Image (tube, rainbow over all chains, first blue to last red):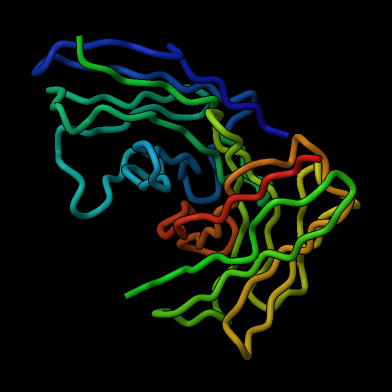
Length: 113
Length: 120
């Protein structure tokens, strides 16, 4: 199985400041045939199911604020919140869908400093 | 509007069985692969099982292999998860999840989840 490791486990950021979450996969999730990274980012708030933010490592889902961005390729990925808002307090997960046996990172809790 | 409505959760004793259902609407169910993802209380997301659009291919996490079976009835637009020999560690909210493209796509729709509690 592909192991997904996020860092840090939690972070506290001031309102309006940048938040950066890293995700590393134990093997590449880049398909050479189409040059796509099979990596997604989700946001989960308490009592709610996860919500898709970013797919294919860097494609923002329609309706997601542009302060959220994804980058990276191969085995190393980053989710950036450029200017943290109060409503961004949540747990964020990366996920690989390179194989049908999906795996998720352990989650990163984002709080307001 | 896509809707995924899980049901069948509840309290069960260790060693017992439950069958979860996920009623789907708002999309062409028989053209979509589906999965189950669970979340233990206060923990992260764990993929459980997946099934292709026609039901011919199924996948299960090692932790549930031999105990859980995923299936679907396309005539009823319903996904199932038969859970046998339940253990304490199976306690979780179980989400029905629809990937955007076969099983190699991000999850664009999630159900609200159904809670399974395994306890004596």
